[in-house]
Image 1 (cartoon, rainbow, N blue to C red):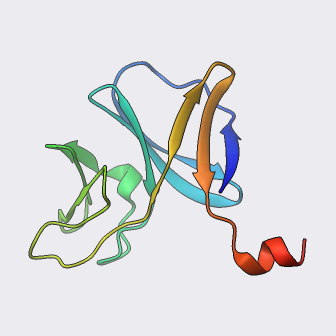
Image 2 (cartoon, rainbow, N blue to C red):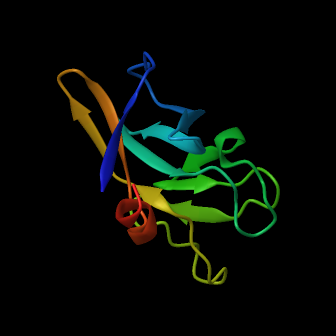
Length: 109
């Protein structure tokens, strides 16, 4: 796991926004005071999750209203799909997003 510092001032209230982390667009969400980081594209139809909203601990895609759990990434029962989630740490010097490094990238770096 490699950690990347997010260079942004984040509001204390709930929000959904997109940030580029290590060259990848990540949807960062503060829901009920807790930060979550998930992939920005809905796997169903490619909707942009950072344009969606939160409901009952889920992020909702703005296109077809597919819902994904912010803790696990699992879609609603009938959807049978999921989104990638990324660990988030609030440290004294800022917000960090964890991303897995590929075996091959570590081997040849």
